[in-house]
Image (tube, rainbow, N blue to C red; front, side):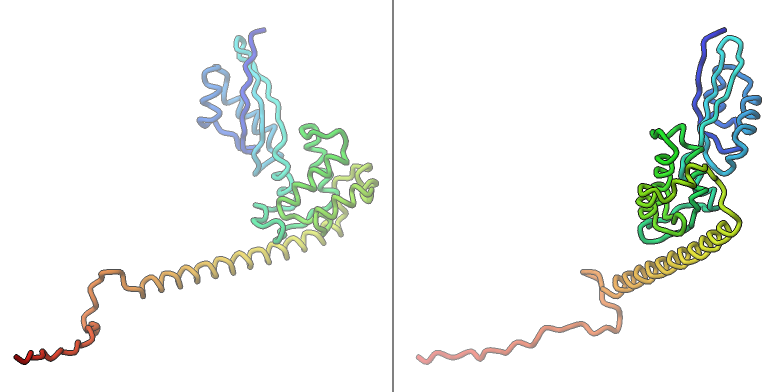
Length: 239
């Protein structure tokens, strides 16, 4: 058995390619890149649309390899759960989705091995904190309030049960709420864009209406004249 070389990569779930980032790193090891790509895509296909950390461990003599897959960032897993492209630009003011506690637990279970926590309850709190930074409500509530409720033991039963899917009625309710929140968010973005465009247009108009220093007056524009000075009558000194 030869020396091991480990290559750490970040790939698109199910869509890894032999591009410069991957091919350029594995090429010098003379491993079968096609086989590596095939296995990476098979192992990450469930994470489509997300960036997935992976390790390719190569035996430098036999050229055999093994692949270990990590999990995408919590934020990506959360967004996938609520079918969200990106989080809120103003998470404290504008909410963009609603996630159930069951879905939070699902993400917590997936990330628990990479989080610095010692139990599922703590991992769940970490995920709720990420929801807060994304502008996502948990159980229809502000994530900060849910954090307090977790500490109070309100969700102990569901966390201990490890349930990862909400019932159909709750899921439908939260999906409807998410659509409404995203509609409001898009409308706010549109209003802000229009207000910004109007402000820029007004500023540009003011600049255009203000003549530059030293500019030549436009033909037909009266040129200000100096006020006529009174002529002083010379006094003749009498001799």
